[in-house]
Length: 104
Image (cartoon, one colour):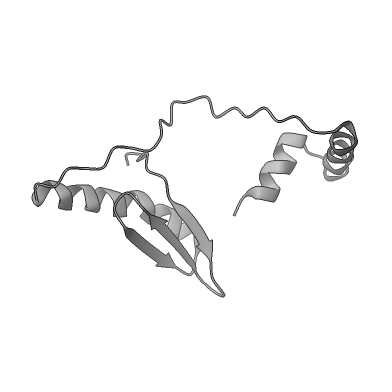
């Protein structure tokens, strides 16, 4: 399955999740986050096919997945030390600790 390069936002509701893809003004909902993530590309593909069938201009992609996706962040030494010990206590790296905290 093709990975589409369109921005989307995932929002957690009380007992379900919703995804909004602004480029196509589509919303997808499901009660299972893993299932929902599988539907995103399919929904975008259907939107693209619909745009083609209706002779509409397909929105430009938002980002390039081949990009580096590297982030540099300057933080105080005290915060870095705190992250180091939190990661060490969890038996993981600082990078993985941060990823686990910000992942939906």
